[in-house]
Length: 164
Image 1 (tube, rainbow, N blue to C red):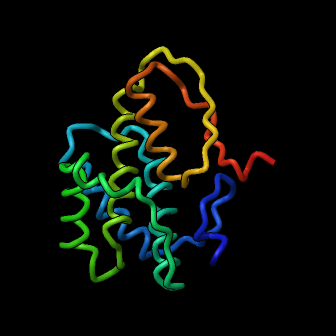
Image 2: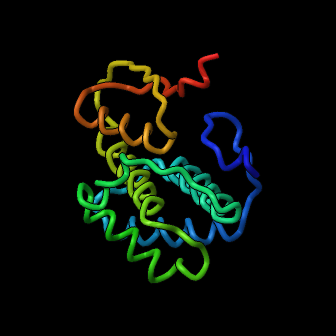
């Protein structure tokens, strides 16, 4: 359980969970109906949401989480998307899964990453590799921000611990 709750770019370490799939489906449907972007790469978004929601379940069960000050401004920076995720959670998911403000912020970043990814699908791109010490969800979000402003293609995002 602890290994499944940590960030990694390798094999997914959690079983198929009906609660996670139900929460992901409700969240994805709710957000996609209210944003002006069609998610063409929905399978990847579903996998990212499943993995993160499962990590949230495990971390809640084990009563631990990691504070990240980079999530403090997400509510203000991406207020529309944050409000969609927060409302969906409050209205439909709060009885099924426990999420705090930072976890809702991370879900917001996951959605924002895929919104950006779907807006730049047809550009001619340069290749980039990023090496970071940030958590997977945040590093993929910020790499997607980079892709939005510059014509680049992300070859890999490596955590410093994975270099060896």
